[in-house]
Length: 509
Ligand code: HEM
Image (cartoon, rainbow, N blue to C red; front, side, top):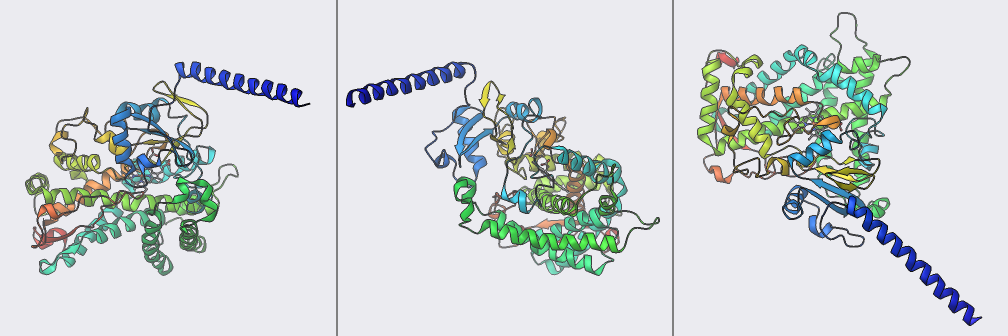
């Protein structure tokens, strides 16, 4: 008995070793053709956590790329993670293999903040995604719709000038973030539900609440979630991040219910200028409509995804210009040369302000509003740059890394808007060395809007006011560090002084 057991144990061991050897050989042979991309050592359970940590992952990926090359592979939280860090590799993901890498991972935020993955941001690449994207493009963010809504941008930016003028009376320093933030909130709010806002008291109150909920949401969102690292711990919700996200989603949901209900109670008449919510409520393509949750998710996409991004894209260059006063003067001289001092700057003037556009580009290059794209996920095993990418990998395009690549950018860490003068590099997603809006199927849907709103707001602020630092500060005291949440918020908001530089009647002050 003992004999037979020992023989069968030996035979079993032999079979096991043979299977392992065959597997190893197979892997080796396959590896000859298609290997995983290189990367740091992956330890059991924690993977490459020690190499990348929680915070400033864009910098960790950027540094890993210096060692391993532009495509870096690692395990994080049990997931296969790939970071791409150069213009060429970004183009592989976002253009050449765009269709394969257009998914998103499952995440509790998609469930709660995305109202069941029904908005764009968290939605997998499926028929619903394509329907939402098409509607947002054709009914809200395309050029003709933006032209129709130009009066909203003008009214709100002029109102921003009045607010800044009121804030800066007596030369006292003030926090420039909050009026810019309010301006963008009002603009996007009016684009979505402008027919009733601000005439409806309930809606006006909802928008006020929205500002508080958004602030609270950003606080939750900026926490590093241990469960993202160790999904096994997700069900314990140790930091109560999921519980807090659910609360925030509920508060957003209640506000959006008011928006929808107000539109249902007061339907648009023939003479009304319909807004986006009117359109969504009336949408019916052969019986296919939008559920209330889908409408809420889209509201969230626009209001949550659009406000900080645009507001920060105005604040960053303003901060850089205060650090470089000659560039500030140059921008103002350019504006004065086109607009003069007796009329307000209009959007139509923007076509004649190359230096201003160079400032916006340089600022979005130095401080891309999202340092890393959200993960792009491939449903099936795929290939990038000859490397094997396992199915369901989280592929991050390091927008910061791309925009700081020394092979494209000399003195990449310096603010030099002049580098764009006479250059045809634009940010529409075809010049992969500068893709702050990303590219391909998942490219930000609001490129046209943002590239109007950001330069317009900045130009008017530069035209209407002279900007200086409080007497106690010098340019080197300005903190140019980002907070690295979903949007790259400037860590400290800019506290500055403004002084009207034009006759009061120019901006009706
Ligand atoms: C300067 C301003 C902005 C910048 C730099 C920016 C940048 C980005 C980036 C990098 C992405 C990720 C793309 C990817 O996954 O590859 C994105 C996605 C998105 N952005 Fe923007 N964005 C800006 C403004 C806005 C505005 C104003 C809105 C809405 C009104 C908006 C709505 C969205 C949405 C809904 C997505 C998700 C798209 C998807 O997953 O398919 N963004 N944006």
